[in-house]
Image (cartoon, rainbow, N blue to C red; front, top):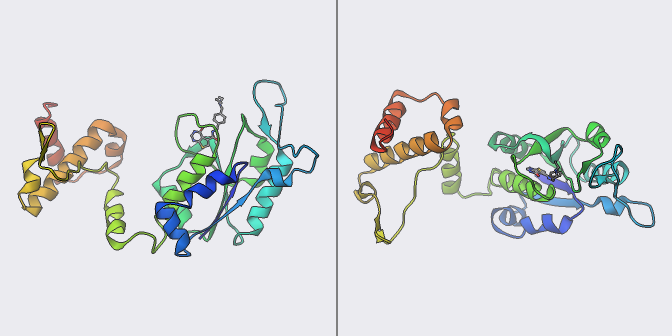
Length: 247
Ligand code: 9D3
């Protein structure tokens, strides 16, 4: 897969490709990253990429022309038909379904904004989709683009080992993970739940499912609401809530 990022801070994007899963994907030739900087397409003496907002107000706006040229250059470097996705606070929520959708493409252009915003005409004429990481304020789209690159790279065939891939699949059942423990058995007056030391794999699986359901219900009721719980899952959740003194 090829991903091109249009950004005024391409050095930031380079960082994500130096470590961990994304680094491995690049090394193995499964992912290629390409950056275009609107600054390189600014033609005036000051290489201007921003200007004051029409209608007044604080901050500056990313200008149409240099950014549009950078997007065009990014498109030329990528397979025909690669969509342009803009990272912006106005976007729909980026989620695992979007990551899966992108991982199935041969190419993807990510546009990371800076300043107070982007000239809306750029979005109208060059952008296929706007995505946000959530309801909090970042200083620009670069960190969001890096998050998308990381989430997509892990889904490319051959990037994760078999075990990691299987774990990822089971995680995406739409529930939060169960708690994890490692040695020592006791620390800070806290012990590992006895069931995890029992060697009884069926009981352990049942306990983990119960914890996953219970934590999801407590912390992310929206996730549980989206699922159709089986009879067994409903019983496990009831058991969890009883143990918590919630029922
Ligand atoms: C404080 C400035 N805000 C005034 C209402 C507007 C604003 C403009 C630009 C807020 C953030 C940004 C820069 N953010 C992104 O480019 C961004 C982002 C984010 O801030 N939160 C979550 N996801 C994303 S994706 C891109």
